[in-house]
Image 1 (tube, rainbow, N blue to C red):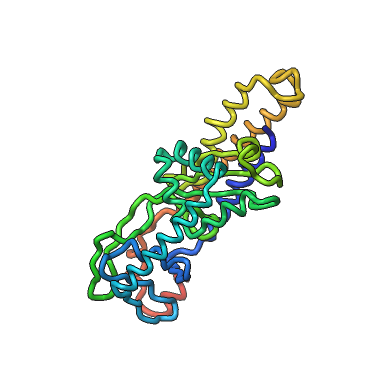
Image 2 (tube, one colour):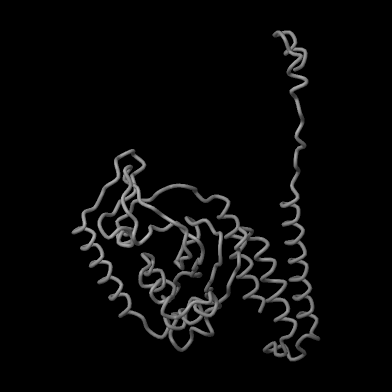
Amino acid sequence: AYTRISTTCLFFLSLDRESKHRRRGVLKTRSTELGSAVTGSPFTAVLPASTTGKKSIVLSSETRKELAKQAKVIREERRAQIDERHKYLISRLADGMGLSEQQVEEAIVSDDKFQLIEQFFASTGLKKLLFFYQDVLQQKSNASLRSDGSTNSMLQKKLFLTMDATENFTGTCAFFLRTSDKVITASNISQEVNFGVFDCSNGNILEGLEFLLSQIMIPALKSQQHWGAVKEGLKDSQIQDFLYSVDRFVGTLSSSRQNLEDKIQLAKVDIDIYISNLQNPSDYITAG
């Protein structure tokens, strides 16, 4: 229990720190993103202009069809790789996000970070696997090309894999955390992998972490009857000290969050009456 609480807390505190250093508004042109172009207009597709100032590239209908064909082949190849381990992740995600397993599977096989799942399963592999479910700007399926080369876009809910260092976290995060360096198999995945859902719909990660600990994890720990080798259970002094330290951590987290939210606000001062009396340089020097 201590390992699970500590791992979860460290993970989300690091997520909060990383979220403060995210780059905003940067368009990335990677070859792996070409597949996303097929979700736009049935006649033309526009790739983002590069940061060097080059013009946007308009793809022909034939090129679009070829990209769509390639993307479909990739999706089916990935779908063929799905085994019981993937199905376990899909089942947990469907329950946590309120989606159907078919929707989750389609989102996973369409994701250009699909290979992260295999890295997570491998021996000494990735320690965490993150899925964000939030509004993202996507091209309308029937979008037409504008005169400036752009297309109509709209915010839509999307489930996608992330490394949490390049995406702004504004929705819901589903996380899988490993507790060892063992190879993840179909028989041990339920014991070696922890799953949880972290709601950050208001954009406040610390508040989401506080809710997760105070309303879910701590009540679950305090109601737990069996503590493994500790026969006395909740009556054991070490268990009591552990629960007390978690309670204190949540209290500290709550205080920190409130201090950040109630940060110093400088009062707005009407300085027009002072400026209107400044007539020459000497008046400015005196005012300074």
